[in-house]
Length: 186
Image 1 (cartoon, rainbow, N blue to C red):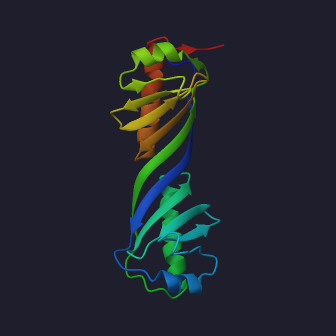
Image 2 (tube, rainbow, N blue to C red):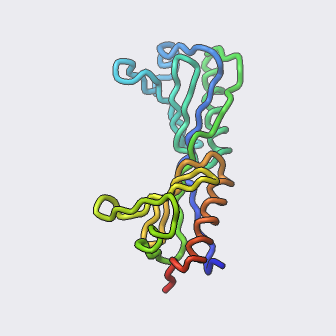
Image 3 (cartoon, rainbow, N blue to C red):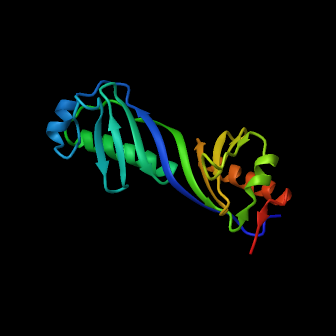
């Protein structure tokens, strides 16, 4: 059994959303001067929020991409806040946004170091080329996530669609490292 419980910190949740209608980004920019919109450089407008601290890209198609939130709930709230703000600014929006989490990135500390050479041989679907990158790239199938595994015992987990998948993946990898005696505790 693991000696310590992994410390998991959700760093970024990327969510897409749609309101199923066209948006007039020029009008939106006029009504919200803080919105960043330079169509000659990028086709989306950036709507930044302080609470929750996020950035939501708005596209003419009515699609949105929200980044910077620290949880699924925060991403939902951020998109709702953006839509509510647009409505308050007299932008006609018929539907509430449908939000879908696309990616969750988490930082993890396992509380001990990892023997990378051995781990690279033991963990299936892993790639370790220390002259290219100082960690193992490990692809987990269930849940479908990718880990960057470092000798310090620190990990980055990306690709999760639900927070529970991230925790399940971290625990699964941690148990495997323990069982295969790849963890080193001081």
